[in-house]
Image 1 (cartoon, rainbow, N blue to C red):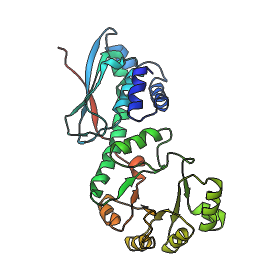
Image 2 (image 1 turned 90 degrees about the vertical axis):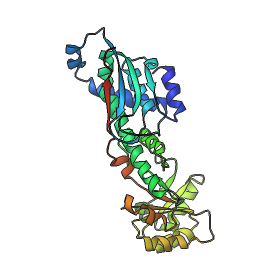
Image 3 (image 1 turned 120 degrees about the vertical axis):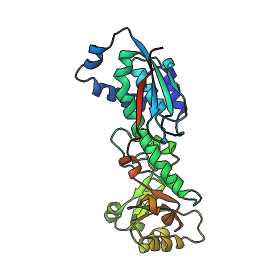
Image 4 (image 1 turned 90 degrees about the horizontal axis):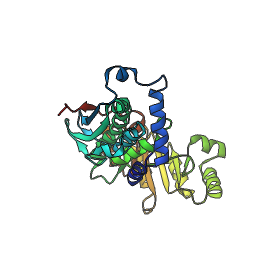
Length: 295
């Protein structure tokens, strides 16, 4: 990876080393059976060209610095990659989001990987923006989860940020989340909280609760972040009411959430909606790579 591309990724808040790992693996996957036989048969090796990355549908674009990293790894000079919009921009059909110039063989070799990155990450950003729009004015934010595709977590969570969402845990070690299996193994909510506080006193701690009674137990044990799992709005309101007078307590709703119910859930007083579908089920945003006509 060239220093120029590494700086571009770092400026976007992406880890250059992690991104290089993903990019190299994606290109290697396409070239595992040899070079691009179709391009080799039809394209003059000395030909150069420019191509535009064009939005075929409206949405929020994300992953443009990663697309530049793909082009760079495929042998296209970073100087030949022009990004026309910052990630997080809303685009209409027909919007040109980037232009890539260079040897045509390398350009066509990189085409599918460039588009795979952009369509996937832009799809996540677009879906996230829909939730952000639905929650506008409620004071509630949408958060992602660890339900990410293996190997793509940092990029997918970056796309959530591009769409206006908030990241939850990046891994298992940056925060504690007590779920039902932990509570069962520890012998109860209070016991589980005490064990985590003893082992990792500085770690942020969230406790998953299925009932209002469990919320009361967690709050009595000193919990300040509670996940309300698969509760209906009535129980959510009752749970939030238990923390009246404790502004430090935060609540997160999770399980079975849908876009059309986002405002209803936010109105219960929760601070976050946890939506795993942002990363595991968002449809790709349709983008294409169009060669510019000669001249």
